[in-house]
Amino acid sequence: MGDPGYGWLEKQYATVTAVPEFPAIDARWARAMAAAVAAHPPRVVPYGEGERRAIDVFLPTGVADPPVLVFVHGGYWQRRHRRDTAWIATPSLARGVAVAMPGYPLCPEVSLAALIEDVRIAIGTLWREASALGLSRRWLVGGHSAGGHLAATVAATDWAARGLPDLRFAGVLPSSGVFELPPLLATSLNTALRLDLATATRLSAFYLAPPKGLRVIAAVGGAESAEFLRQTHGFARRWSQQGAAVAALELPGRNHFTVQDAWAEPEGPLFAAAWGLLNDD
Image 1 (cartoon, rainbow, N blue to C red):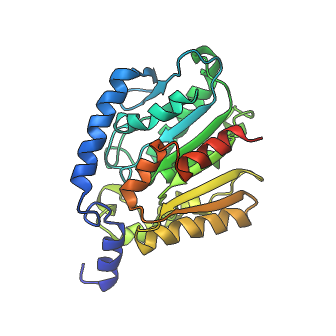
Image 2 (tube, helix red, strand yellow):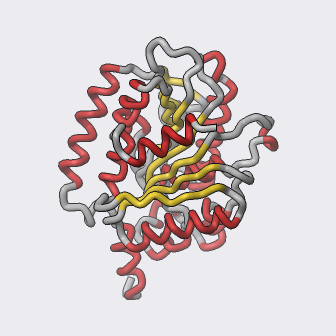
């Protein structure tokens, strides 16, 4: 605890204390979530035992075989619920895009490795049931913060080895992702994650190999910490070197939480990036 490096990294990843207006943002999100769920009640698709092992599927009205935004929530793998981000679905539904939000049990109730496996099972379940749900197989996977890490991990999964050789994504869009996990070992976040260096390295999306040619846009706020900026730009370089088609999208003036707001801003660059990945061939 006396190591000055611990203090620096702790501050770099302390997203809430870095944004004094976070309580007001969180309250606004809660109101928006309640309104979104009331207006568009999701279909709940279970994929395992327990309330958290389920996917909320929001379907657009009057659209056959809609494309799908799969959005994975954040919370440092130890906080939040899939429904907290239901408000992100509203503008996509208005454009005829279905939105699927997988839930997952949290650390330390489960290990991070088990959490990642749950998200993979959720995605595989949804893919198998896509036709029954009225969904197309044109999918964009995205997520925010820890959800960005999970989205990238899902995209780099060997789905053929899991019996789903046709599972692929039109694109991947992580925002404010935490792709490289070893720096978290020196922070209080690891109290719940319980990672050692070998496990943190193995579970880092940064070190995974994406499918060749996979289209990726990695977004980050210009007002985020130096570590979040490094994580995104480093991830973009690394996956580009591994053969993915990657671009970094820096949103000027955005902090860690107002970046997530950008998912629901149809006139903004992040929404346009998602729309482009989902609809461009």
